[in-house]
Length: 188
Image (cartoon, rainbow, N blue to C red; front, side, top):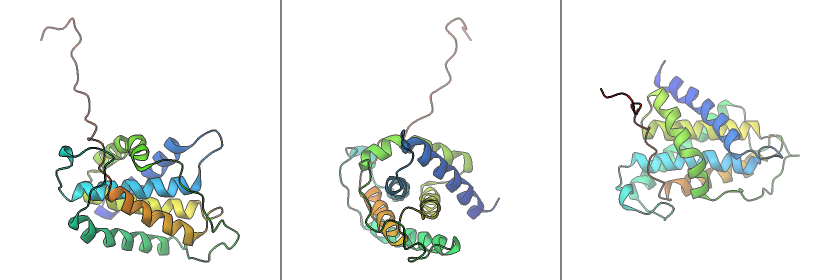
């Protein structure tokens, strides 16, 4: 697969993960789904900048010139994918143009999704920068899937705010895979 194909496949899996991890008994809250995907894209964008995040407290704000320099490319990719998916600002005038606030905070979203997004990235061989790109693609896919209930202009605003929030909030430490343990009865 080409690099972009890996990102697209990872994006599809991120969409499924977002829907699975934020759904409740009523279903999936559109604004929260768009925001969650955007926040995770921003989280991996922040990680891609090589800042000493392990020395900072998860959930705290962090400001970085590197994030500010890389952020516009994430938004441009998001816009491009929206165009490719045929999502336009006036696509569905009956959709909700005054969205509700997302149901989870940035740290709550990171806690629900970080390990899963990291596992998806690992399966597809994506570094943090490419995982951020896959997250932006996933965000556009969710905007497309929620277009019947959420106005595209409102969704665009939620998504771009999500990118910024994720990129400016210290994420939790990366989940590490558990080391294989030998059974207690094996000596070798």
